[in-house]
Image 1: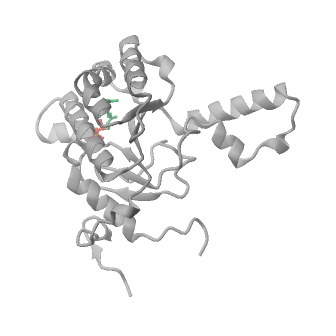
Image 2: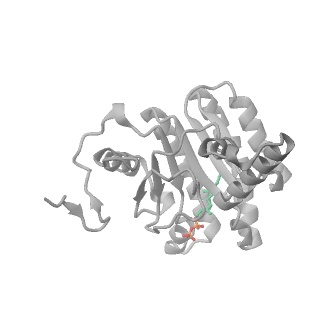
Amino acid sequence: MFKKLNKKKNQPNASNNELDLHNVPNHIAIIMDGNGRWAKQRKLPRIKGHYQGMQTIKKITKEASDLGIKYLTLYAFSTENWTRPKNEVNYIMNLPVNFLKTFLPELIENNVKVETIGFLNDLPTATLEAINKAKEQTKANTGLKLIFAINYGGRAEIVHSVKSIYEKLSSEGLSSDHITEQLINEHLMTHDYPDPDLLIRTSGEQRISNFLIWQVSYSEFIFNEKFWPDFDKEELINCIKIYQSRQRRFGGL
Ligand code: FPP
């Protein structure tokens, strides 16, 4: 029998299911898309959309922490985003400074640990300082790991990993027989984290856009229609319910 589909979202309507708090995804990764369109719809400059997107990060971090999610990885800035207009790039680069100035005490209070993946050395000094300060001040926290992907790209990450494997093997005089999935994993920027169980992309776009391309091999994908600034607790819970209605087989039966 066919499952009843919610036509608009083209996925099973799980909103009537109960949320199972014992089966929340361990790791949720989010492509926060639609800030620009949210602003355009309101005849506002694009940067207003990014500002509002930052407010959504605060709300969703809190919800994820309350739900007992262990890892939340957010795609904040890709290695390709530098091609955007300079004022937009500057504004986005300043958001972590603003975000952490206003939200760091709450992150500390809620036992959230701030971490990052990406090529941080290319970031402006003030951005890097704010991020390093947040990492330092939350390093002993044991709750949700809030991982910002900043100046991150999946292909660049794999190139970086392959280079460091090459250096290791050649310095130790080892052959390519030593290259395994595990070794590649260990050289990725995500080596400390489990793979995402659930990948959410907002704004209705259905692409992966170079995000965690190795790590999402067996993740469940949910494409949510809301623009990121409008994504909220209800949408997050609905995504988790849809996730809970899926059967994960990891290539088996
Ligand atoms: C996608 O929307 C959003 C981004 C490229 C930037 C998202 C960044 C933040 C919300 C801030 C990051 C902040 C911290 C604290 C690290 P879009 O501009 O591509 O939207 P569009 O597709 O509608 O144009």
